[in-house]
Image (cartoon, rainbow, N blue to C red):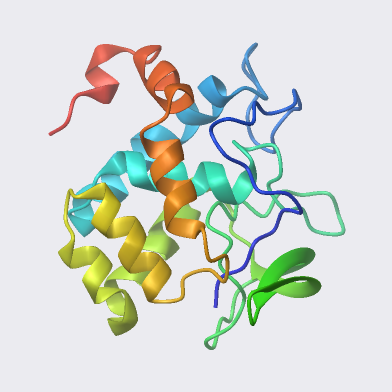
Length: 195
C-alpha cells in the first residue's frame, strides 16, 4: 500500500542537502528545523487522534520525504503534499502523482513507478494518514501501541506499511535522534508541550 518515494534511505545520521521544500518559505526553508516547524502542529493533532507519540509521525514524514526535500510533485510542478508515501490504491478517488519509488521484493531492492495520493495541503495529508491508520485493521497494533514509539514503529513495519525491512529502525533512529531533538528545541515552548 505504501511505498518509498525516495531513492536513498534517509536516516538521522545523513544530514539533508539544502533545498526548498514544496510548501516552506521561511528563511530556514529546506532545513529539518523548517520542516519540523511546518509539520509539528499537524503531527500533534494527528497523534492526539491516534493516541500516539507525535514525534513518530514527524519521523515518518521526515523519512518519507527526506525532511521535506523530496515531496512528490505532479507533472504541473505542484506539490502533492504526500508526507507519508501513501499510494493511490484502495479505491482512492482523489488526485494522484506518479513517481519513481524503491520497494523491497523478497528482500531485494527494486526501482519501480507507482501512483501516490496527492493532497491540497499538509493538513489533508495528515488527515488521510490518520484515517488510513485508524480505520485499517492491519494497523490496529500500531494504534494500540499508544505513546510507545518503538512499538508503534515496529507494528507499522509488521503490518506492511512499507516494504523496507529496516523501516522501524529508521523511524526510531529519526524520532530519537539529535536532528529532531534540535528542531523541536527551536520551536516555541507552547508548540512542543504535550497536551
